[in-house]
Image (cartoon, rainbow over all chains, first blue to last red; front, top):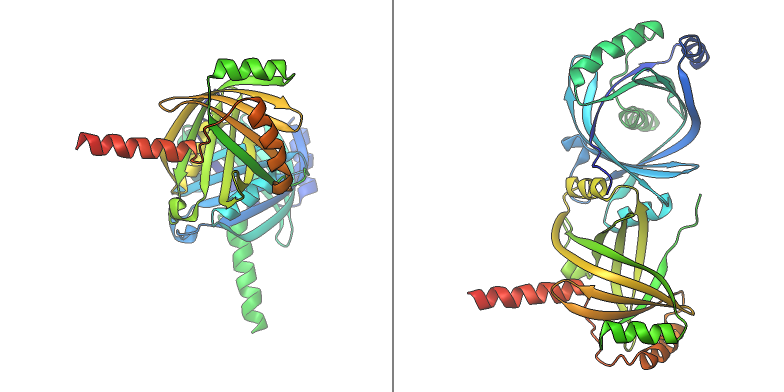
Length: 187
Length: 187
């Protein structure tokens, strides 16, 4: 039986100063490229709970190779990063997983498509994202049981990659806000 | 991307006339033994829907090799079999899957442990079960898109394996009824 993996994800997201530039800097720093993937993230609403209010999320990530189902708990804020409980299982068939979730009363309410190139730089994971309708972003992430110690590591990487404009909203929040603004403009 | 597998499971369950006897008959008929596994089936209640009334079930099956999450839809009754929609995904980490499901408000309300030996006999699957607290059973199952045609196949196998006492309740129903009876005796 595998061990239960609950990781605290400490991450920090920035507007990219240009993905090509960032990937060049990563190469110079000796970061190891893991992969480039197209991802489709489906977010669901709960049948009887307001995820917006409880600050939770249920996400089904579909990639070419398979999929994973992730629960994200409420954010515990430290200064400039967000930490939250994240539990993930890999599923062999993302379409069947979506069908199960929908049969249970969860409803798809947002779809986010992105192209992600992932790098490892020491204990840090760097995701260089090109998000449909939102633009280019860089996410720094440390998986750890000690959120505080992670912050120092993030700060060093931030400087080396020249990331200056932090973005504290999730892609989900950004897309929902953008859709709300566009809708009000049309009225 | 894998195809979405929705199968209609047509199955028929019987009190076993003795698992050794049944497995002997299966060997004589040339059935192919697939495996013998210890299984732990966790059933969950829904956060806002009464699965008892809607005749649905959410089950997490834990085996030595991994796990699977299954949604079972309401039964569509044919004469002596039960057919219901069944959607399953394999998950790489059953404990994490249970944690996700519980974080979403589902609650474990029943646990069924069994030792199952599975056989294939033509298009028929035969499960020879030893269920903790319930006893020995034999399940015949055809996975098909045509419930009606499956019934003939089940009937032939039933006779060859000398299965006479049909049991239309699920293990879950049987265990819940048993617990209710034991509870009322204690009062």
